[in-house]
Figure 1 (cartoon, rainbow, N blue to C red):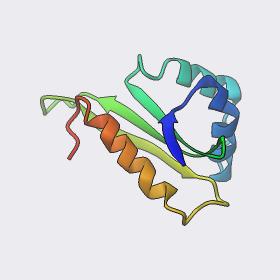
Figure 2 (cartoon, rainbow, N blue to C red):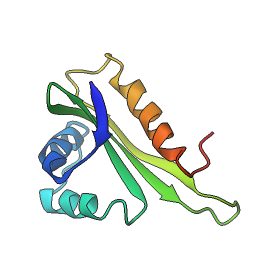
Figure 3 (cartoon, rainbow, N blue to C red):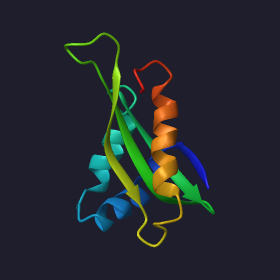
Amino acid sequence: MIIRHATIDDVPALCRLFEQLGYTIALPDVTAMLAHSEANGSRVLVAETAGTPCGAIVLHVIQPLHETGKWGLISALIVDETLRGAGTGARLPEAAHDEARAGLHAD
């Protein structure tokens, strides 16, 4: 399994993963969000097995009013229902934490 930044090519798989959690989201909405994610202070990481996305985590960079520095906020963590229990759900937050360490408060 590898963990990498999501690309526009991952949008159908991301929609499928969110649907497993009961969310119905449109491809154009996810495509637009992903296209502007880094400019908006967000990162979407994808776990991939055998060339297929099997999980994702969404990290937002926020600037709290009461603290200096920036924080990372995780708004979504998804693992394909057929692959749960294999450690993907533990590795994605670790990868998001590593991503956040590049300039955020990440304790």
